[in-house]
Image (cartoon, rainbow, N blue to C red):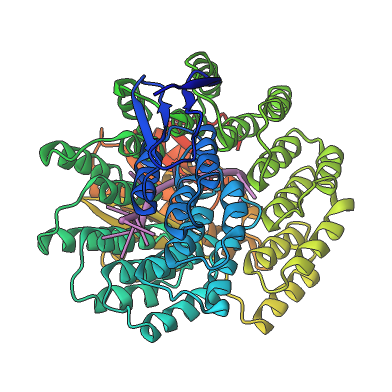
Length: 626
DNA sequence: GTAGGGTTAG
């Protein structure tokens, strides 16, 4: 047979050789892939032709080749077929080298998409992470139901639930929960775990747990999803209990379960448990993949053991963007900003492309250490790299400018944002104004905060504290009254400490701890030693309209002091006392902890909401900048 | 012919 090469060469990957009578039955097209292997497309009968299309797509390396295959297919003499087309659609919607827009155009041309096509496009849109519209897959699912040509199956519902989980679309997800019964798919393990994951992501943890409890068979996916659900909202002891229960139930955890539980340790600062889990991984030969190593780096860094984090990182044979990003962020919260920025340069040298998460780490490193010009430099290099800033980046920049006292610029920056600033950004600006004593701006920003969310407890606490710190007691109490009217609950300051694998949590005025009497004894001892050191309590940190003496008592019972006292009670030097707090450390507690580290000769590490404070012999690693 | 669970500003 004579062939005429049309000399087509697609980026050295794919030659296309077409015979002169290419569309007649019995002729063929040859594809040569990048590994020099050949594939042939024979024009025989439609069903065989479709099979061939399917196997070609299985090997397809990129969109360019896919377009080529698609073009061949369209120009073939065969009928329009949903099967082959949904293969093409599947690749462009789902493959890492696919293209969701191409998939969408293709999908829109299918007159009667079958359930596979619907599933591909729904799942494809859920995989697109940086989309401007996370609800797109949900609307496609709704359209599928509306048109009624294809019925959803268990795959459809799993994918739709995943989309609802990503978009935190509670109402739509609940509707799908109803449809699960309507279509008789409630016995599918995939649908069940999809539901449980969806409720967990929407922070409806109780519903999530009831779905979990009702599952007749629970596999390791269900356990992991439930553990992650608890961990994400800070119910870490529940997450840890579940991990123990899982083992009792004889379910073998895999690397994903380990990521879930280790990230729970990272959140709560449970170093001992995290270390134990690391050994557990080795003992049970659990595969340590890139993500698990990254979770370990993150855990060691967030639990205060930066050297172990470095060790895990150094021993990694392969590092992706997230691994580098975690290490950079870890160094930054430990005050090792030079090392963090050096590591960023090293990352660039190794040709790993930084992403938006990397820049969250780098920018927050600059903000935490007051490096304004470096921060600005990273901000512009981010744009050069084509990374579109998201809310977190704006948050970092506002924080950076505010900490440097550049309030005007920070304010201008917020007002010029192309996306509308969220509560966190406005609160960062407000805190910046308060710290810089720019009270001319605070009222306007406060008004915006209240307008944006009139029922947000955190806003009210911030405002009430702001007025109290300026001794504007009337305004402060007005805010408190408003809070009561709305029945808003204050987020209490919580500090936790891990002793013998148990996480103990303390809050102001909480008497429920069984060893409270002994803790009081230690607190008394602390107060005495602090008094002898000549420290004057900074009563401004207690912002209630009460007498100084009461303020002093309230200060002594800040949650971190209770946790530190408990640590002194239960451990002996040289064990480091490690405390994790959900809010920022107040000025007085910071000073007092320094004194404790000196007079009790103990190293104390406090992780607050944003960074670590390592207190040794009367001084702190943050150099009083926080 | 297709699945489900894994980190990120204040």
